[in-house]
Length: 169
Image 1 (cartoon, one colour):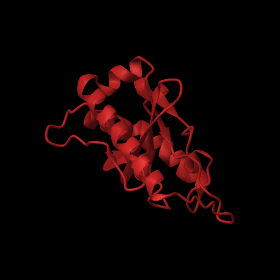
Image 2: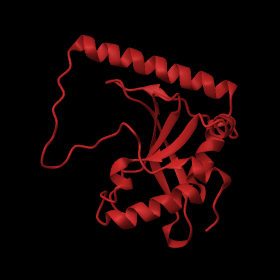
Image 3: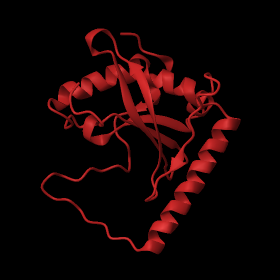
């Protein structure tokens, strides 16, 4: 398997994403005002990231250590789907075998007219969905992926590829 130059940009875990266990589901109660504030913040974050990507390529941000690609924590821990460890190995192969490169091409506007824009969800999330292809042989897949950015305290963008919309590789 070839190892792309940007493979060092991939991190195993998203620093702020947690998934509730099946036994204990946390409950978060928000007022309408809190939801409006979160949505407002999410819109501002999406606007800032979209503007940044118009000025600077995602590759330049990676070379300047301002962005890294991460996978969903549940996948990184080998706990997603029917066979979590197999799903994790296939996800790594898929990500480094073309999916991240394809995403960088999309974000760097290499496909005119098909440039995704980050947007804000109804409850304050920031994301866009796209189909990405990667991997080799029988593990090659085109998957619907939710691309979720977050900005950490160190001034780095973490771009999570959430491929948990399917449970079996």
